[in-house]
Amino acid sequence: MSQYGEPDHYILHVSDTHFVTDGTLLHDSVDSDANLSRLFERLERAGRRPEAIVFTGDLADRGEPEAYVRLRRIVEPAAERLGAKVIWVMGNHDARPAFRSGLLDAEPTQDSVDSVVDVNGSRIIVLDSTVPGHHHGLISDEQLAWLTGVLAEPAPHGTLLALHHPPVPGLLDAIESVELKEQHRLETVLAGTDVRGILAGHLHFSTTCTFAGIPVSVASATCYTQDLLVDRGSIRGQDGAQGFNMVHVYRDRVLHTVVPLDVSPTVYEMTADEIPQSIEQLTAPGI
Image (cartoon, rainbow, N blue to C red; front, side, top):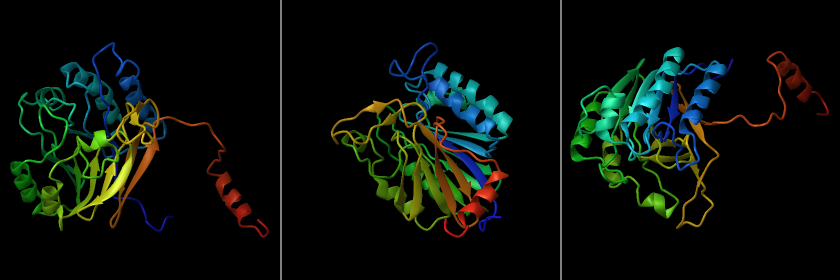
């Protein structure tokens, strides 16, 4: 038995699916639908059952209504089989009217898509960091006031904040040009609250940081990722290293784990019955 015990909550963190319309490939090379379908196939085959699946933005590549229909066709049946809530977050490639009508069954307005979701005592706050017509992020005065009001009352198991634009350094010039602006204003609101983690996307690579003393976890994309070893002033999307995150919430800590989308070649494999014998051999004298 682990000294940590079982986690109170298990959440799946997925980002940047970038769905396109029927019969087309993203950038003429990436099958966004197949990648996401493969994620759920792996998850179900492994018997993992998250309580919620949080999608942190850029769900469609061009905000097209059909892309959201295609996304729901894959996600909702899988989520139902898993018994998981689905939590959608806006990204800069999404369009609010189509996002609202296509994913939330709501009126297709330009209103900011902010919400609060209870996941068995763990509160997930969805914050729309997008600016219509632009790719950088910004949290408005109205949103900050709303967030302040929500956080005034702590949640039973604490809060996770989900937004698209992460409050972290971008590493590449192109990323810095579309980062979350005026981050200090959000930092002021979050400091001293019950927010235990920030979930984000946007970057197309996995990374971690701290913000207002809070851990930030950025999930990689399921469509394509960024090559971080290019010249700082350039950019190269690559069809590889896609992944998603598992979030395990314990009483006194939150664990974020990066999981590659694809299965790699096996080096070795042991059954549950074989592992104790292997450990015993490793602890034998002379080993």
